[in-house]
Image (cartoon, rainbow, N blue to C red):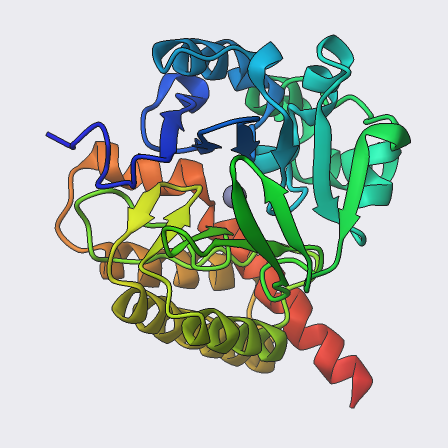
Length: 308
Ligand SMILES: [Zn+2]
């Protein structure tokens, strides 16, 4: 059984958002203390679960000071506009490259609809715009005095061009979003998440080096929970990223059918996951579909080929 505190410092809580009723797929961190802040509320479809999770730690949405977004992908940021509609005092901290899409999400939703089609509502629920007055844009280099602490902000491109990492110096915890992949509690395997449209391996490696230079005590993953072995964790994820990237590159070079190329990557990821039960396989797949990651890497290579 997993420790409900996941080995977190006293000043940080983790709420299991129970995405589609599944535990340990999408999580929301709470920076406790005066003016509490949540990191990545998740999609609107999990709002009742987030509310129940906050209640368990004696909080309600009206107690929050704000929402700090690691990045604007639907599984992380989808609920933001709905929360602000009902709790207009909430501040929304977001990368300046992501902010325009929170204010006017049409383009973001159009591209998501191309991927998820009729599943959009079931998977994510509504995605409401955030009024510009609620938004605090960041780009890295800032120190925020929020959630009862000093929080250093870092630009963290790689998984997404609009990704931020928040580093809490008082605990050594780094809120990494999807920068260090997916890893379920009690497992050592780290699965990369490389969705379209802006995977950038060079930028990503620089982000990971920056992260390592902070000497974090733990990495707080959205999918799911803390990694207490940052160096090994990051090395493991990067190994997989490079192998995935090479696999996709070779498929493109050979002009393989997309469905066959995707299946090749899925098989590789599946083998790396090792001897786990079917429920755990589904948990990883729900947190980050490998087929989507294939498209993210293919896009990365095609951009490079077009540029050369
Ligand atoms: Zn994610």
